[in-house]
Image (cartoon, rainbow over all chains, first blue to last red; front, top):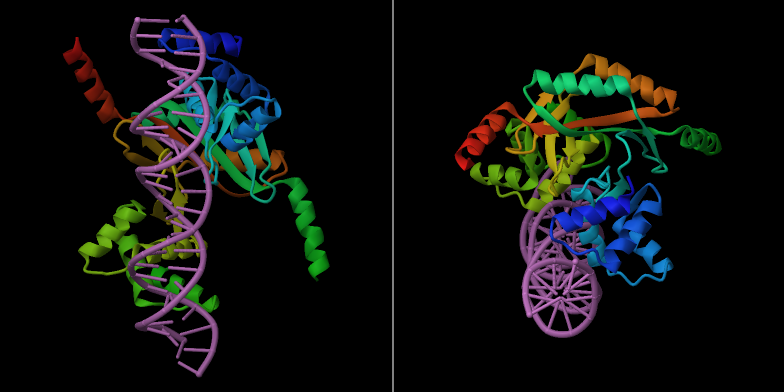
Length: 149
Length: 149
DNA sequence: CTACCTGCAAACTATTTGCAAATGT
DNA sequence: ACATTTGCAAATAGTTTGCAGGTAG
């Protein structure tokens, strides 16, 4: 479904207003990199001649999370990053270059359901973060090691 | 292996000093709840008549993470919590009462290794967080629903 | 004796909030 | 009309850092 439509419906249902700023934030967010921080999103908006304040970006992203269009992640850092929700997937995070590789895994989904059930938990959501070094950075590291030697 | 011994060896190897404060922090940390925030650990130390400052607790926990005795987690909150490292395990987090249930799962470990390998990643560590409602809170919620009705 | 450590206070950073003016329905 | 929204500036909260005096090796 069209995200603008979904957002608009959500706002109406909550008695909230669909403002120019909220439309601009969603549009920029939806077209930006898959993972953006508030700072990055503000920069993107500025480059689009939008004058939306950073406070509004924070508040709008919170709304987008509420209506299920966005997901917030912390990974390792102190800044939160937001990603648009399309389907569920997990993350492989390179600790060297901070590249994020997404992946989905059917078997894992089933496993996780079974585990939660066995502990009497009703699952709401989950995050699987695999931290490691990606192939590109491994190549760089080994050539660096040669130089040092 | 004895954690105090491991810590002592680690410090010596790094040319750092084993101070009274560092010994106290490790001891309190090792005996405290499985998951503690800095604030909780300081409170625990105070109740033991220790006068260690909170800055030192932050710095010592960082050292404990470096030498592999502690792990830092953020879960959903803004505060970091630290847990002592014994063996690897995952976390089920109750979003209602914030209870944390730990579990280990052999099959999952293998799966995760296979996934990382298939994307050319060399795995360093990973976190699987399952968020949901525990059985106790589900019971409370349903009785609450009856009252409202 | 020398480099490391402590703890206070101040700095820092990401995020949140109060409020007066502006805006959507 | 009227509640909601905006954006600035100020507050907040967790964590980090500078520094002067103290301590381990």
